[in-house]
Length: 154
Image (tube, rainbow, N blue to C red; front, side):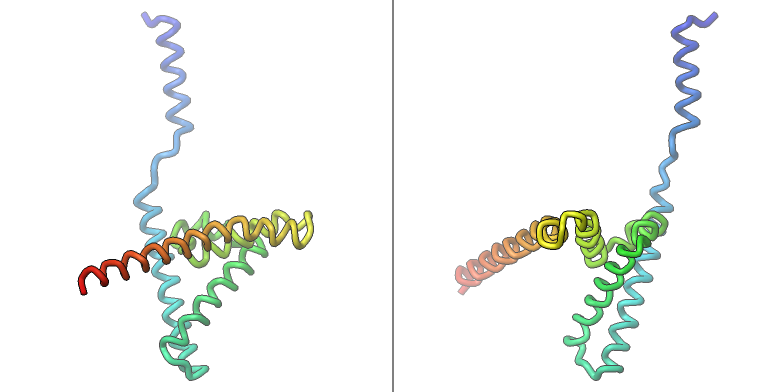
């Protein structure tokens, strides 16, 4: 005969099994791989088209491709679609460029009631500022180390 405590533990375990979500990491990884690959293929297609349409060199065509992805992420975020896409398609959509554009646009949209200067730009650069400062500081540090190593070698 089971005690009241054992019965309670069994009930808890039954409820827990109904509620718990089984991990879907394999499916998530596959989805991220496919969507990230699709975005990379789209970027390559845009890259080739920008070279053809505007007679750009390969070096010059990179910036319009990046700008197109940033613009698309900002527009999708503003229209309310980016979050749904990232939920459905996973981490493949949140590659550094589109994810960063989404986070900056989202924070700017959340603070638009506070005004343009203190609300939108203040909150937008709260996220962007951290990333930019870290990027500049780490680039400086890596460059300093590289120069130092080259001086020691020569």
